[in-house]
Length: 220
Ligand code: SAM
Image 1 (cartoon, helix red, strand yellow):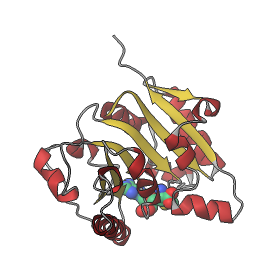
Image 2: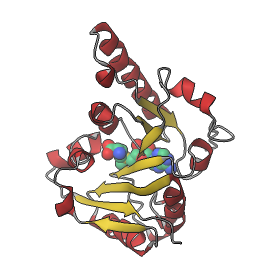
Image 3: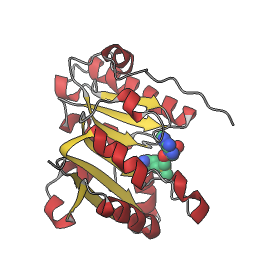
């Protein structure tokens, strides 16, 4: 199949007005890559009222669903006269291939947080190049993250977990944060159950393998 995607030539301000009609000078800081049906974004929205949260999703129908879901939440919040921090104006979703055009959307050091929740495992050796966490892509994610920014991963596939931990541990710009240090971390607490895939794994009594990494400062 041949896919075409609309993406900006560079991270220009005006592009974002269409994604976030009520942006109020805020910038995208939190990315959910392969966001699926958008459960994480919705749960996190009120915890980060000063940041924009953005879901990236490659499937048209799924990304359209997330956009509609966000519009409905924004509409209800308006009707119910919700406070600024609970109006869902900080949520957006873009249909794109996250493996291709990220630097067209975001500037160097713009992001604080990237999530990869229950990404497609691509089990076969030959398909490992399609994994969304890889050595090459990690350098791109490191470019977009500010120092002290974080990557959150979770999966029910142990082999994929080991692969992601291996890639991230071996990358010079990332360092693992032990799970014990994340007990009070909102993102960590949210990333087990908020998404549709996370809920499904719980229903099927599957295991979850989380791992969180810190973006280190650039070497001198
Ligand atoms: N994170 C969601 C969750 O936990 O429910 C969805 C998990 S689902 C197994 C993986 C998602 O990643 C699918 O919705 C898929 O369409 C999306 N995806 C796969 N490759 C992608 C890519 N290159 N760019 C953007 N999204 C992608």
